[in-house]
Length: 499
Image (cartoon, rainbow, N blue to C red; front, side):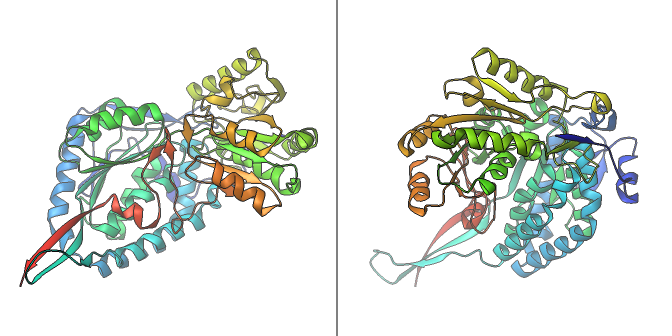
């Protein structure tokens, strides 16, 4: 592991945006201060320095935003044809393609993801926008047979449900917001977005860019502020028709409770503790870096991170040796350095949480093979932590059962496939998972056996909206991608016509 420092300056557009005194809410096509006039601050995770101030919205601001979204939903936006919405999404893709460097620099400074990683997400964003553009023109109902006497024709129609409340996580807001925005624009809905207070800036900037690209006022609104105030108010608002939420299982429970006000349908992507299973016949040249970056990408701050690495006993020693050697290739450093492969965690609180799990792992008898410390020297003011590896882990330990959301990998040995599947399933979560094997029968046996929403074979982390992504058990419900995703933004109307 080596450390790095920034190697370039911000571009003019990113610098201009970040130099604002206060970043206001974005409601009805305008930047407006919070009703209370209160603000919050956000720090650059790479330096610990205050990066920006932004509006601290509350219930009154959510009310303003929802009113604007409802007005837009009933207004001219409701007359846009599918082709017009598709053209808008295509135009947005062109604009974001041109502005992507500005956005990733804002994102890197706000939440700490390395610019090298963020640049690699551009194809995914473009695919997402292309997918939703295609969905705009494929929304359809059915003509159905019926058993009603007489000359009755029956059919179903699909229609936009109304105002969507989107609650966005801090671990990747730049791209994750488009799972909501794309579906909103494709379906004809409107939205009020509530980004995490830890990382709100890219969401605010995107809202401005969307408005410049032709999204009508009120269609996309952003209310920043504390989750316990703005987020709860959005989830409980009786005029919000659906909620899309990505975040912790604990917060997901509170969203579910708040949504009972008007029985909102929910799309929830919650926590995970994914098992990455490496069989004895795996190609270790691929499995070692694949399993490592299944954890250390984004500093472990990914819901489906494969933090439980299950390794078949005959290859545990070789796998571990190769993994430790791979760690020396990681470059930990400032998010603005294009050579950085792992940046900081989001803030001091998250760093303290990760370090507490390191202590817990040691106390429970796991062997710390690598890392485990906060980084100092030139990186000492940021929230940097060494990527960490535990060996000798059992599935009863806290580091194997609880979501750490940091760069901590646990190696769990197993003897046969039945044991591997049993260990993988011995979790309250069911978000992601993987298997590495050169034998297709072995791989498919694991795929069919593990109870989780998504499985990868000889790879980790690929997501395509054409294929979709979802969770099960305590990891939530509701698909991201495929036509099932759009169902969260539409309702079905049954029609009976007596001829």
